[in-house]
Every structure is written in structure tokens, then in C-alpha cells.
Image 1 (tube, helix red, strand yellow):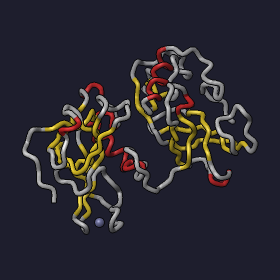
Image 2 (cartoon, rainbow, N blue to C red; image 1 turned 180 degrees about the horizontal axis):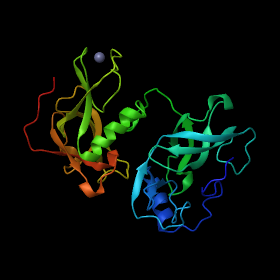
Image 3 (cartoon, rainbow, N blue to C red; image 1 turned 90 degrees about the horizontal axis):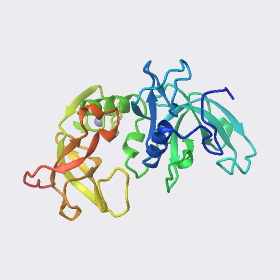
Image 4 (cartoon, protein in one colour; image 1 turned 180 degrees about the vertical axis):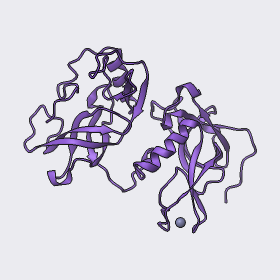
Length: 294
Ligand SMILES: [Zn+2]
């Protein structure tokens, strides 16, 4: 395996848990992976206090990366040791998370080494109970294309270009969608291909940040992204879109949330925005009359 400036794993981080690593670990508890920007503008993941290339202290700017990434190099482990993170054959891999300029060393689960390759896309598999430790990421797994029911499922379907463009829109405070000329449907987030007819979708449009709640769920378990417990997650049909997106609902008691309620995105201040969904705190009621859902 190539020697890199990675923190030792397993056995925990052996570097001092200074403010930089501390920030990285606390973000893990919220299931976010952050890097730190160097004075030269590179993004180090995991973050280090000093840029290994120049020895300069890093800036205080943290950048959310991934959560998916690409395998740079890997080594297959046929017989895991007790101290290894997985009890079945796996690979140690250097993973270049999307948006990062350095590699994270972590375990990748795969059926066999043939399932892996440099350039393969991988996604983190999180532990159920985060503790603010690198092992909050249990391991990485090769990209799957099936739908799983979680908030990020929608984005998982469209790794790479379309997601990046969409998130860059979110950084500017707009939701980008795609319109299929054949189906006459508008999809958000932006997609490269129509999920119904398979047409490529060259037409990108900006959608407003207002919409209507189509369905919702009241959640009684704490979530680091949620304003309080219980909190509401909902499908929101943005005005002009034909497919709803999932978001949190805030600024309203959970029991007052209803289908047809008009909502608008609450954005974090522009100075705090990154190319991530964290820019949207939640959607809050606009006070407009409810919409009749058809
Ligand atoms: Zn279509």
C-alpha cells in the first residue's frame, strides 16, 4: 500500500485530537465527512493541522466531502485479524472522496477482489450508533444502483456529474431540475437521464424554493440534522416539479404539519454555504392557503 498522510487505522487515531481532528470526528457523528482547506486551496481528508505538502497551517475552512468516493489503490485482505474492522475478507483502500484532494484510508467490503478496481465508486456504510470516531463509518461498499429508503437515496441514484451540478446549484441557493421533452416531466434533483423513458435530459431549469408537502412522517428519534424531537420529514413537490424531494420541516409544531401545506426552504446564511444539502436547514410553512392535492 502506498504511504500516505493518513491517520492510523484500526486502533483509533494516534495523532493528537486537536481542534481539526475534533471537528472531523464530531461531524462524523452527524454522518458528515468534512475536510479542511489548505492555504493553497486543497481539501485534506481526513483533515490535518498542517498541510503535509508545505508544512503550512491549514485554514479554518471545513468542506463537506463525499460521502461517495473513488478507490485510488487497494490491497485485499484474505484473512482478517481480530483488530480489523470486518470479520470477512475485505480490502484496505485509499479512497478519494468526492471534493477531496487527498485520500482516506478505510476498509471496503466486497464479495471478492474481482469486484474492486482503481476508479471503482464506493459509498460509506454508517454504524447505527455514532460515537464520534472514525469507526462511525463501518466500512465502504461498492456503489449500488438500487433504491434504498433513506434521505440520500435520491442522490445515490445519480452519482457524479448530475449530483455535483445540482449541489453547486444548492450552493447558489437554487434547485436545479431537468425536464424530459418526451414525458413532459420535471425532475428534481437534476438528472442526466429520464427515469421513465431513458431520454437524456439536456434541459436544466432552476426551480423555486417553494413547494407543497405531499406526504410526511413524524419522527421520534433524534437526528442531528433535525431542529428538535419529534421532527417531521416530508416529500415536498417544488413548484414546477413533477417528482417530490425529501426534506425536513421546521418552524412549525410537528402536529400542525399537513398534506397540502405550502412551504419554503430556509437556507443557511450565504457565507456558510457549501455544495451540500446542509445549506437547507429545512422547509418552513409560508402561511399561504393549503393546496388541494390531486
Ligand atoms: Zn422521459
